Length: 351
Image 1 (cartoon, rainbow, N blue to C red):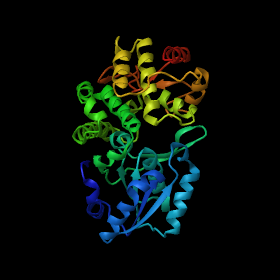
Image 2: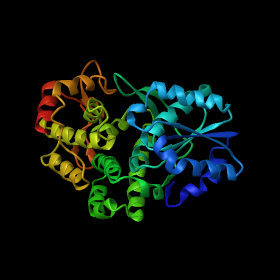
Image 3: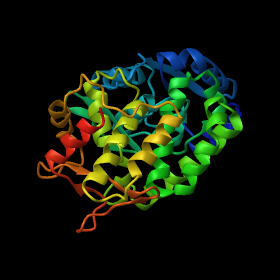
Image 4: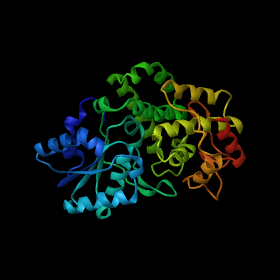
């Protein structure tokens, strides 16, 4: 569900699509201050039992320890198997709250109420939940689809501009992997998007969500084509982790897409000019495209070894052939094996 003013209708939609005896509204400390009390009050005014459960803001708090703390909070509130979880916030909140829902009392239903552009376009859709561990991002988790996703773009009015830019990294990614016309539309709409024009944001979210939903519906458990959604993420996750999460997820993914587009050209998969087109689109939205100087190639490779796409110790990437079309390997897989030396060369070229 994408539009304006939808948050006010959340109680009715919960009662209709995710009925429960009690709702645990899980939110990070920043979003809880902005929207948490209001959402819980709305639910209670509608006669629903609701509890606000918060955790500290920041990607570095998406851990097994935070998962345990949130789970314990639900137990203290006596949320039963007839309860449900409402994830109110960005991608970190959705991943964490979804993992809590997937595992709490062996699984309870949940819904996604994303409040960041990145979460609306990408992270809230698809049912992937999980937490980060020292070995890498999202390596412990579960597939547990939400009952529904409600994206009220009015909540983006309080979102800082760097987070708007970060969300556009995923919008560009969806265009590159599946819809060249969408990339043209994003670039034409760029001034309005940067100004947080609500109508432009509705267009961005609606099309981006539709593109991701189509891929996920075809391959819900990432056994095939869904792997294309990882474009930019193999390098991006490594950059994000090695930076100590100083970079926003979208910023790290933007760097990852720039590197991986360069890699696609260098190994002869992509047509000439792809890296320039991807880099230019990312820069239009104020996103970084260069690997930080203090992140060494060998260190990034070490972190990338923990990537979920690594098979038999070989690096595999989801790489585009051109804007709007992804490559397939000779065996039909949607990821391509790449030699270590080629990866190091692409990292070096992107500094």
